[in-house]
Image (tube, rainbow, N blue to C red):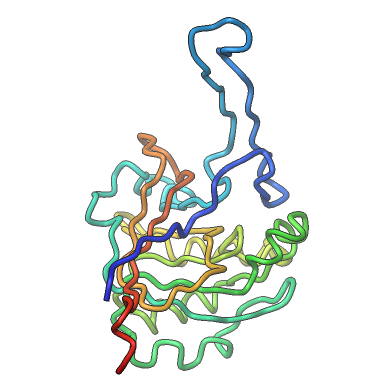
Length: 233
């Protein structure tokens, strides 16, 4: 077996799809070699919840922990589990969708849901940003019961909450992130449209903004792959 590292995050660009309430990334040259400057330097304007990013408690909780309150150890996960739950546009995840998902893996510290929306992100960014499936209060509460050691929840859609029902499902963030001193992370818009068999470790490397409510992040995964000659006789 050999260890292989993969990106579980999307690169940021001006084409990065975002939910309706989040503005697009803006890039503009500050210094330019073409203009005769000594180097290229680019100004970046974007919301903290853009592209592959993390939500931390201060996103929804007054006085909640900020991004820079988390330690390095809290950004490393050694018991990740990937759950395939293919759902269509605007489907609100209910506890009935989740029955049995923790069977044999209730010790997971990171639970990742693959809704199959990677293809939608690539083919129809507007649909991806506005019509994705997502969680509500009931399903968020169910996950906390099913995965008592879960420290983070990730997904391949741009929001934890089902955007079609955002008025009520935004509270799913409060369920997972709420409470003074709560140490939990939500990872949204992950790159999961790839082979994740043998995933053993996930590392979050966020844009390290002091006091931030979240931020874009590079997510790295380590998986074990069968090396040449190990497959059999």
